[in-house]
Amino acid sequence: MKVSEIMTTEVVTVAPSTSVQEAARLMRDADIGDVVIAEEGRPLGILTDRDIAVRVVARGLNPSQARVGDFMSTNLFTGSPSQDVEEAADLMGQQQIRRLPIVDKGRLVGIVSLGDIAVDMEAAGIEAHSPAGEALEDISKPAEPKLEAIHM
Image (cartoon, rainbow, N blue to C red; front, side, top):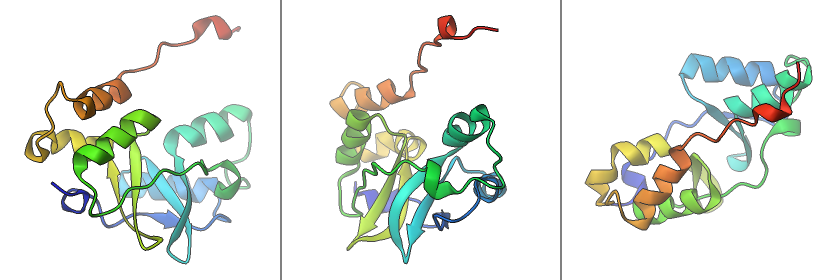
């Protein structure tokens, strides 16, 4: 099965100058956990709901003044529409990422999430005990809380 068969093609994108508050509003309205930061259809980075919580809110910054371009993850791994789903799942597992923007000729054409792959794992022929299946399982495991770092 190819990535093009399971990817979401309606990707919410914003410009780097968009406020974090506006990005969060878009996430809420679209019921999604990320926005892709793009210029002229070319992805520059990604901002997740977790990025907002950890990089902006937890630092006491004003989300209406903070710009997504300053807080986005720029180490962007991408896939292609013609890529096998199992190959995309392997990449996501290796890089410990939950979302993979899909690019064709440098332009954003979709996005695949861990959830998309998990739902279509059986249809894609990914066995639960295959490297891709195990990678997806590893991504899904919650991290151990670092409670010793919290001092109240």
